[in-house]
Amino acid sequence: MRSTGIPISQLAVLGRIIDEGPATAAALAAGEHVTQQAIAQSLATLKERGLVQKQADPSDGRKSLVSATAAGRKLRETLAASREEWLTQAIDAAVRPEERPLLSGAIELLERIADVTLHRGGEIQ
Image 1: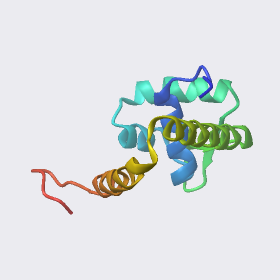
Image 2: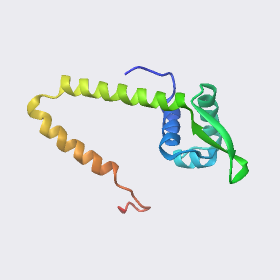
Image 3: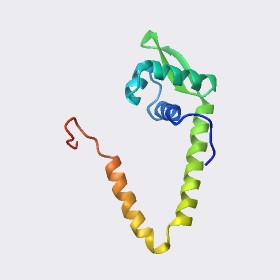
């Protein structure tokens, strides 16, 4: 997989913006569980690279909404395709044909785990 020179934390912010739509810096900070200062730094770098843009929030002109640019969306698509290609090649190289059913079972289990939402106290929703 090729390197973008962009930290994974900033790629996560870009992904959140693309997946969830335009958001305020405060909402992004809460979603990423980081401080508003950390988000401000990430957004400044992403904006400098032309991957996000800011515009006034139509419901509250004192706030700005951050959205992905076409270049930001293209970068995410390119990274996803690269990651998928790498994974396919890695599986082909490392997993023997008779192990494929085990891999399928493991993937199913990991997907179930990823879909779990925990409440405080560890209860499953």
